[in-house]
Image (cartoon, helix red, strand yellow):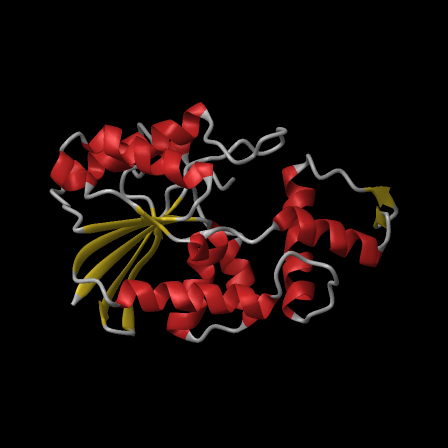
Length: 228
């Protein structure tokens, strides 16, 4: 039996030329999560991340906060299956498909509300195979996340997984048999350093907790809750 603790990365640098890095706030979120793991004496027997910089930096922040080597776990195994989908390409293809204007206004992707509204539509179009020349198909995305779950199913003990919102929601879709629209809506509610926990026996995964922030629930830290 395994306990699989899945963590979305800390706040990344939305609206900058290099999204794939943590902000100072993102580092703080990760360190506080590490402190929480240490206080709860949650030791990890295996650690997995995607190959993205924000995944590695989130793990580094968790380890800084945890301090204890046993809690931080062994060296991380990097799995490309834990990487996020290519939102830039999906948005580019969706905007090209729908036109250069949205509701009569020019599209400003630096506006987070506009960005996520369009991303939701782009993800649904992607799932229906309506977007051409994308980095990977929807089917390929689901297949690699499913393969990642199969890899995790072979683990025993407590496993830490650091990934992105897309794989977090795709795992949930696989485990709970969610429809695509529910998965997409769930994806867009993923909080930075949100914790999702499963218990598993082989490929039989049972959800125990989703998108929780035990390290940010206090009044002193609630202002650190973000979604980017």
